[in-house]
Amino acid sequence: MANVAKTMLRFLKRSGHDVTIADDVGQTHHATLTRIEELVSVRDDGSFTFGYCKSCDWAGPARRARGKARRDAIAHLPDCPGKGKVRIGVSEDSRREGVHPCG
Image (cartoon, rainbow, N blue to C red):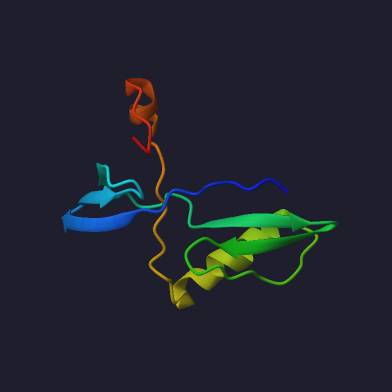
């Protein structure tokens, strides 16, 4: 297995939805927080599929039908404890402007 370097990010300040972060080489970057549009998904494992919550990593029971697995995940949302997970990525606007997430 190849070693893949991961950039470590440190949050410096936040004002509303605008954040300033620093990478592991000390460069600062500005970002805007946005809600993850799809909070649930399904994951397949062999012949089975599982509902999956992106907020808390919950996985539902094994199902044969993807629709039923997705409904399990949606039914989980009202009870979701959430973990405040943050995902850092590049928006389509940034890609068009040639902005790279790490500098």
